[in-house]
Image (cartoon, rainbow, N blue to C red; front, side, top):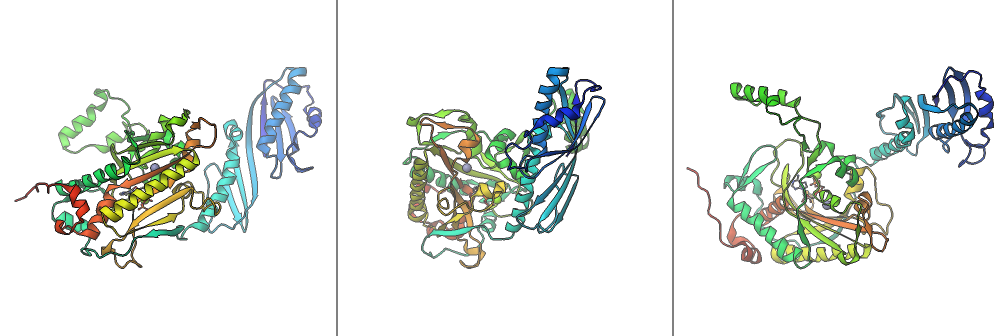
Length: 499
Ligand code: ATP
Ligand code: ZN
Ligand code: MG
């Protein structure tokens, strides 16, 4: 690394070289003998000291330069009343030995030159300020290189999937695509961009599901209802880990630069004249996004307990939210109701000591079995999948066998007859249940009364996915629907007729 230290005044008459010879083992601390950092070159000009520092993997040059900064401050300060004003790296060259050869080359932000050759990687960075050096951006860049290469090797491999439980095969009412048939009957209407209007009939089905969730799951397990915000700001996604990945799926939220009416007058007038909303004008009048519409639902709960210590008497904490929609950009195209941009989900969140978190999840699974087997009479299965947050955060694979079915996610999947045979067709993930370990409690700095480890879990129940599953298996003919479901369905709502 070539760097420059700017001092508080001209260094004329001070022999910096002699002072730097007194550093002793300063640059070797923390490294095996002889493997520390070294000053290869040095020179002084005016108020600047130029240094070329090299090192192996132990004491990185950006650490070494701060050790030198302290050293110089002490020595030059006492005798000559000179301090270090600033540090600036002109050029930083890194050579890395990689575990795996990259499948294709890539570039990284801040890295000027990046070349790969077999399992080695050479990077050149230029003009790095103190923030860059002090906040370990260099180390993060080094880690990111390995992570990206890991990801390249993981890509294309099927997601880790392990069957845990499957219902018996069932006889289904039909093998049609329920979205098409429901649209034909005006039960649902597409509004473009993966958004649907649910007519009285489809709404009644969804509301029946909701009441089943309330009566058969939420009440017996004593979850309390809360209302989570539906705008998730960057601070939330930074702590939940979503900021590491979801950019291509966010519905971004922007505030106006001002609510001053005059500021918006040209937009208003243009609209009044042309009848078109002038998006090109609006684009410049809004601020950068503050975040986006709810993506995963539970992250918006966590600021409630951020930085707090939970009392033992409140554990396990059990809450749920059904107060609004989640949105994800599923990239254009018209999908059926099973993949929509705006969806309705009931999210249960629980937190407690590890044993409590495990226990809540197994109770939830028992309740789900009762609902899907005895009330909805579905053909479904449970699978252990790669923890979603590991995949989303770019942390690949499962750590070890014992953690395997503890921390992580269970996907609940249903067979959709219209998609083909049980063996060959893709089943639909209609919900999941996760034990998130200490991911959220750590991320949001939540402590337990005992001071020991605190975990959490969540389960997201997708109403559109339930609707897709139920109608794909049971058809649209009410006569053929399961009795236990009909008991809770009530009177058939009045249809809206069109002429
Ligand atoms: P998929 O692989 O089908 O896209 P996902 O892995 O993205 O699903 P999660 O992030 O695990 O889904 O979300 C939890 C739950 O939220 C899902 O089980 C599902 O019920 C619901 N969900 C997610 N995305 C959608 C969507 N686009 N439309 C409807 N429901 C959704
Ligand atoms: Zn969740
Ligand atoms: Mg998805």
